[in-house]
Amino acid sequence: MSKRIDFEGQKMLVFPPKIREILQTNIITKDLYLTDIGYYPTAKNHFRARNKGCQENILILCTNGRGWIELNGSHYTLKENQYFIIPKNTIHKYASENQEPWTIYWIHFAGTEDIRFKEIYGKVHNLSDSQFARHEDRIQMFDELLIVLEEDTSVASVEYASILLTHLLGTLKYVSQFRKIKEVNQKDEIYRSIDFMKNNLNKKIALNELAKISGLSVSHYCLRFKKQTSKAPMDYLIMLKIQRACHLLIFSTHKIKGIAEELGYDDPYYFSRLFSNYIGKSPRQYRKEETGG
Image 1: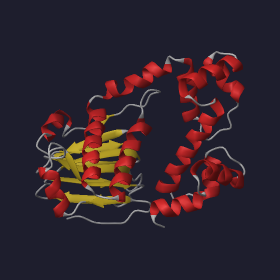
Image 2: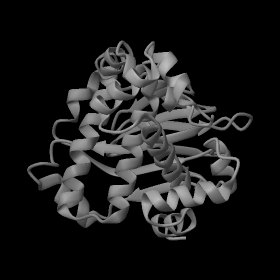
Image 3: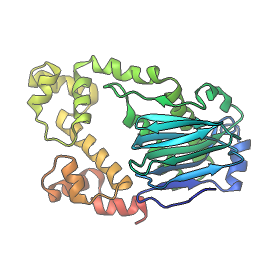
Image 4: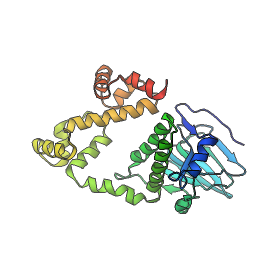
């Protein structure tokens, strides 16, 4: 028996039968496609039990808290930075722990070639935390799938979603290869400073601090940075902060003042002007248009 609850801030999309028929026959999507996708934050009392299993494989990625999964008589605990794929047509149960409820991203997927990822089904996988982990990059793929498919379910959108799904599953199966680009970038002075920016978006960062991290003089750092990114360092930092602001406006219920503070801006009015100049609309207007609120 399944207990369905709405979780504040949740996102969920389920394809109707007509779309599924297209997915199963389209030359691009039939190999691997998703039928359901969602995001459940702090999902207290979340519980599912399927006595006949599910027609699709179920990916559950836990980003916070913890929960459990029962499969073939075995009990598994799932916690932060771990994932589990429940194979299709397999009896199972899963639930969030009430004391420390999980936050999860989940996808139901199938296809004639889903067997390509069979070796990672049915077990807990650790996505160990490290400076090269790229957790946020993977979550961005989930968010992109949700945004693209919420906008429309045209043939082009579902084809793109199928390709992105293959990439996402690839990041889970080939973790070391997925992290390699960050390892390489970390060795470069400029990318080392960019990584510092990404990990400290909640702080006020000075130009001389970035140059010091790179081991370069300020003038040399600025020249190198502009050559590699086509942007000045502080403009690049603002871009990262605005990108993060967009994410928070869509996927959180934080007030604009709170988002400004999370990004190191004491003055919410300055943050709003900066956002408007960059995006072309105010944070409030952006949230309303992107969430339909």
